[in-house]
Image (cartoon, one colour):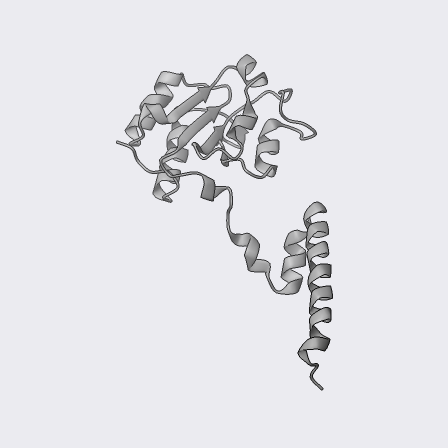
Length: 177
């Protein structure tokens, strides 16, 4: 037996209110993905909201103690077709302790953050084990790519070139030259 519109309307209102409350709770408790899947809406979170606020020709931030000089890294970037003005570097261990990491969050200017070895005691890590983890786990940061060689965080010309080439080849970064 089907209900009439007058009988159905208060039920619909109650169901929608309960679902709204459950969505808020699921979001607060980091279970939103599972809750949406249970409702049959698992595809709603597949959209990368972080990516939508930056552009392929945006800034490339390089953070971490580097084996290569800033000039050498700029040269590698130029060889990959990237203008030197697209790079922002913080390669000093001391400067990284006070780098304003929050400026990267929800900032369309920044496209990707390439990270090497960073001190564990930085001003912005909060309760996270490192500022790298904080940026990876906190919404609104650009894509974070760890620069590593042999399983160890390291900024070298070869790993820098490989990461830049990979990002260009996948279409994530646009050449500027």
